Image (cartoon, rainbow, N blue to C red; front, side, top):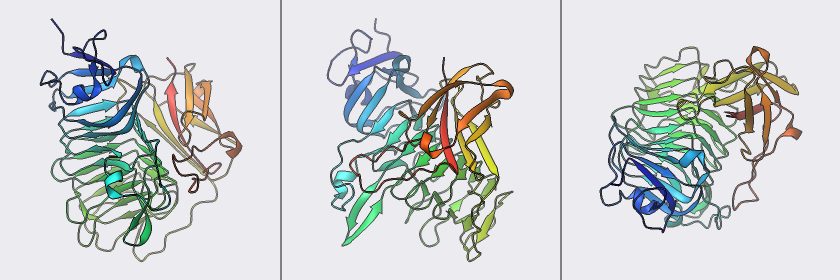
Length: 409
């Protein structure tokens, strides 16, 4: 008898039963394979590039989510997009991208062309976990996706230029989100290179309530690195923001009520708070209520943030690292003792977040749990935007560096 708790997809076209010898196609699996994929199942994808706009309509439960992840940590690429419309589906460790852009930078981009290009969640309890999401229109978690969100992801270079009316304007964010009832989570993501905003919690007429936003690193995005608040009277409400950090760009901005902040680092500057905000607790965060002046970024000192992954069961010994090297030293020592599963003498890879595949160094965790990090600009690279050689993103070194620390098994 076929055991449906283990499913393997090798190609999008080969029919089968869900075993490693007789795999399902990916589109069939995402649609539920005639009702045979149920809550608590795990779907394994074999290595390769899966071409298409995939819609995941699978239905799990809070107690028994459906898990989709690579088989034996193989490299899985989704080319065009993956949108989740079901419930409690958790997608792990995939690269989701679009490499065949046309007119990405000249404004001749039609809305119908953009809409499918994303990593989006419109159902309930859906999550992207440890994924690399880039060169799409953007990543979205929408109003119904309570108990879901983005976790441990690297999200970059999303968006484009498009014409609205007769105006050529930037469009697309790395995380764009709305929420209504129960808590929606965005934990431990790296957000850089978006044409517009890094983190954008915003609405015209919907709701942006009940968020838990922690340990996100946002930098080098086209507009604000962080923004939470809506049009007119719409505010972010009853939400918690903690240990987030940004490298200075356009000032980060907030409009909300009954929210709490704690230990966020706004690039040594201050969070710009809209005057309509009320009854918030800003903890030890630096804030400037409009029209207060925003201070300049520091010119000396260091701030180092080490954020272990939430999902340590899959990503044991992994962490995101942000180094604010205001002194512009050539090297910085980072204490990684807080990273679960990583000990003195362990081997690691350190990936530069701005060129994950190519900017990689290997090393061994030194005495006192130290990792030595080269902060010279000459030692690091920035990957370009697919389909746009005009609007490049500049390096942030030596003043700032963002990294993914990977334990080597």
